[in-house]
Amino acid sequence: MKITLLTGKTFDIKEAVGMDIKVIQPVGLRKLILHIDNKEHIPVLSVPKYCSRKRAVNFVNENMDWILETLQKLPERKYFTDGETISLFGQNIIISHQPAARCGVRLENDILIVSGGTEFLHRRVKDFIRRTAEKEFYNRSVLLAARLGCKVNGVCIKDTKSRWGSCSSLNNINYNWRIALAPQYVIDYLIAHEVSHLKHQNHSPEFWHCVADLNNDWQKGRDWLQKNGRLLYTYF
Image (cartoon, rainbow, N blue to C red; front, side, top):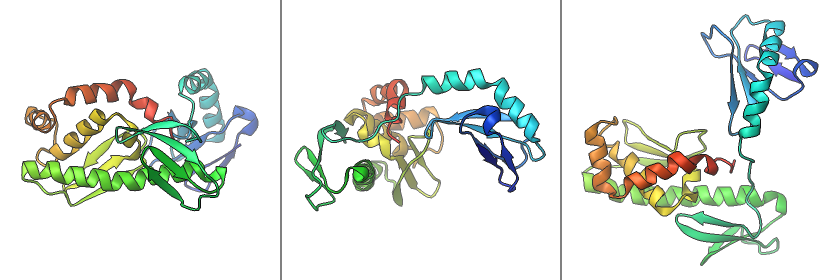
């Protein structure tokens, strides 16, 4: 196993740690920091500029029990599969892999037809969700924003590691593509949340009043995300 720093310096610690590990060198870092990348399911070691190989290896080995315990607690990564039923914008959809269909990906009623080889199935379903989400979230965000007298400049679908959405001072809204797999009332809450930031760039009482005005059931959606949001991250 090789650890490559942004400076180009390389540590070969395969025999020392015996696992894949990503090493980064943030500017100005003064101490070793270790965390788990929940998306890639690998440890990430942040090192200071002048960290030695020996120091890095020792730090990883000293924290090996924590690394293994944390990795074991991570939910198993999931792939979209043939015959699987998923929730897409609140509608139950069955994935149907039809290799010879020559349609790319097409939604017919509650059947999502996916053509091509099995090795492309997961990526094609994910890409379809992202494309559809961009249109769906944009249209719904614009409608809610109009109720506030605000304007949405654009909507972008992201593959973020932890955030479900964000709104910039330029009135651009970002949504995590996985939120399209959540129940409809959760989607309603998140859109109301981000649109409310068009008017209030904070989480003040006025902001939450705005969310409630746009979505009476917002607390239910927020609670679901807090309790079950991590399950959506099993899809990578």
